[in-house]
Length: 151
Length: 138
Image (cartoon, rainbow over all chains, first blue to last red; front, side, top):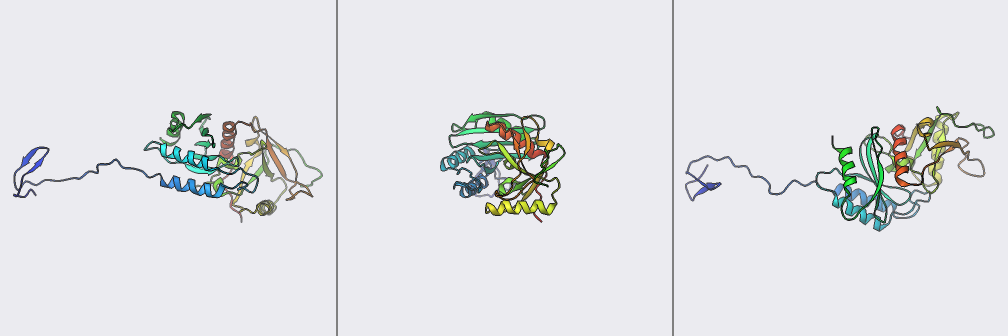
């Protein structure tokens, strides 16, 4: 209810006292989806795999530089993209996996040099390849994330 | 299995891969990850043939492997030989006999993995797709 005291305007139009107005307050910011779960999983993988032989079978350690590159890759993942699950491989690389089904998934292995080795299975398609992380997630990787994750 | 008469691996044989890392399977649906089938250093992957072994014998081998590495045995995944013996892979018997341990006359290797990482990943994904869900230890 518009009160008599003072003037109330809605988009510049003055309202008479007694006018009833429904007000909806919209948040100014776009909704954000926290990447914290992926960061937490990454830290846990690093803690478990930063010493050589973490698999008790001669695995290479996951190095701090690899952790840093993966962290930056996750930060660079554009809004709206799903988060991967995180793992480690015996060669010390960190693996990111986008998974919908056993025949519909993408894995990206990240080396300490910033090389991204990707392979996917989408039914009969089995794309694979190599690209570099240069501060942004390569469009090739974004394309396959979209293909795997978005119906 | 008679360690003196190790037959070649037949296409219809079941093979087991032991799971000793929590990250090698997905807790949500119990499917196994490609990580379970990524070879390291050597371009081959260790498996155990079922053949004449009982379930208890298979689990016994798994427990010994985990104990030797001081790891947890999270379970195992089964794969049919024909599902991972596609080009360029093949499976060869590789019995582990005394003085090597753990004793496993049913041991075999999947060999022929390419050295390029994306190609290894692609094969591991396909094998994992054909493999059984995690079978937890009894």
